[in-house]
Length: 237
Ligand code: UDP
Image 1: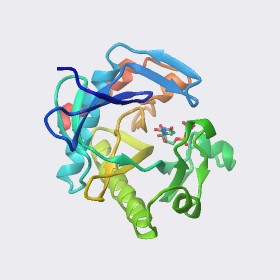
Image 2: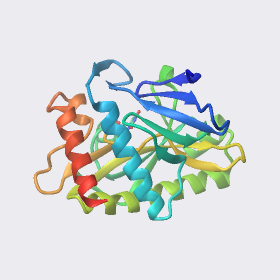
Image 3: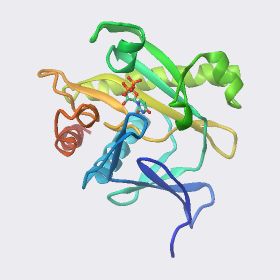
Image 4: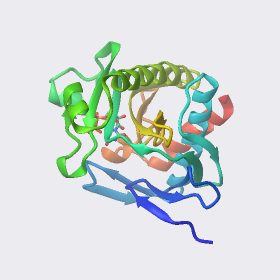
């Protein structure tokens, strides 16, 4: 039986599970986009790599006591997750300055942020996902002040956990983006994906970029570097 397609995004398709009303099936696509969808390409194998990497990372986070929507990986490109309504916020945590912040605030590339910087962006393609502050977030979404502070606290816990996980495979976690969703019981859960599409990952020894920046900047082969991340995680986890 064909599953009902609920939503198709830039990197994933979202299907309703046919066995549990509260579960979704995420299918990772081979498409890569950058600069708010202006640059596009297909990479054979990208869907599998991100599905496997994201599944391993959600499991590793779970082992460190951080819950998410992740239930299990089903096959090479799909995973089963708890159904949530995505809160239209992108929570970005930055350990090292690079990317948009260096231009926006004229901060020197590679400046260390200690403590890490947390930023909020409003998830709206037509507006180009603008940077917003807490008050904007409370106005634009249905979350309460308490929920916003627990989302930010959770993002910082994810940062500590992921920093450790990546350090163990010789990779520096530079920055990353998280999304959160609300399940049927009203509980806010870490959702979406954690992958080299959504994290900046630099090799600790060579500083080689092992993430989507190789595609954004046209400096390397996306599949080769995503495979490198998956291989290292598989050896370690
Ligand atoms: N990011 C993401 N999706 C977005 C925007 C950013 O996953 O729509 C991630 C990006 O991969 C990086 C971090 O969030 O790890 C910070 O990105 P930044 O704001 O520097 O954006 P960029 O320089 O890519 O425009």
